[in-house]
Amino acid sequence: MTFSLSRPAPLPFARTTAARAFSLRPAAALASRLLGQARPDIAKAAAERWQIAPGTSSHIRPAKALPGQLERITGAEFGSIGEVVRHFKGDFEARQGPTLGYRLRNALLHDGVLYAGGALRHLRRRTTFSPAALVPREEARMALFESWLGNRWFGNWLSDDCLTYRLAESAGIPYATRRQDGHMPEYERALDMLPARGTSGFFRELILFDDGAHNEHKRQRAEAMRRRLIRGPIERHPGVFLLRGRSGDARVLLNERRIAEHLAARRGFQVLDPSHAPLDEIARACGGAKVVAGVEGSHLVHGLVTMPPDGCALVIQPPLRAVSALKLLTDRQGQGYALVVGEGTNHAFTANIDEIERTLDLV
Image (cartoon, rainbow, N blue to C red):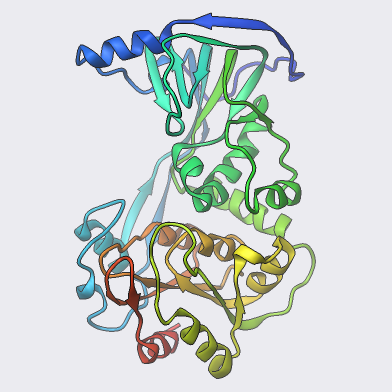
């Protein structure tokens, strides 16, 4: 394996599917698992790897919250309670890793799993299992820009995979397995994304990216994405409340509508249900907002990727499922983050309107 600071020499990007390829790699991987022999991650099979952007350091700012809010957290997702609370408390330096590229040779994609050189990576949940694969053979260099998280949650697709696309378009033909749904077609048009799509394939050359670090290079790509989404001047206003309703994983704020109506009457917030609004309307509402507020979830990412550089997210957290993932985005962009922790369960909880008002006074 070699290490290079530059990507591989260019190849023709025209997509050609000359034939089909047969492989027993799924059967071999299953046999290894049954024998207790774990396969390494696909990055271990790279024929070449290179650094696209160096790692950088960033200051993690404290979240704005009233006294006693963090003590209400009794459960967390994507980390322990201690890790999530530490991130909310902030006031420390974090080292963000580099952005890397990998080149694989003779890689197989089958039923959501990528195989190469005795290694594998799951891109999505399997739908079926077949020990053998008969798949199209891709002769052009393809560049995979999607992730497991982006295939699972729309918010991760928008906040991360769409940024990785900008790396993919200069490395090969951008490739994805996720089918378009929801707002994806509108975002892809607005961001000039034209990926090839498929559910299976045998790739003579496949480029992958390690783009999880929130370094300076990723921050700049996020700024560029906002400029593509916010075209021209936009009017500033106090804030927008993005309704979650009952979409996505169960996280029902019982008094959500009452909170939204209160903020509209008291503070001049706009109220928007992004699940029923076109992208242009979302971008206008969030692009000029001082505050983007709502229940924690993927729908808030609409607002975070478009809100102004000096904007602030106000996130209402359920007490049993606190998540600091959205704060990763505001920390990276140097934006504000405030939170209110509700009372109840994951499936049904409430938030105190007076606490929301006093938290907004801190912003």
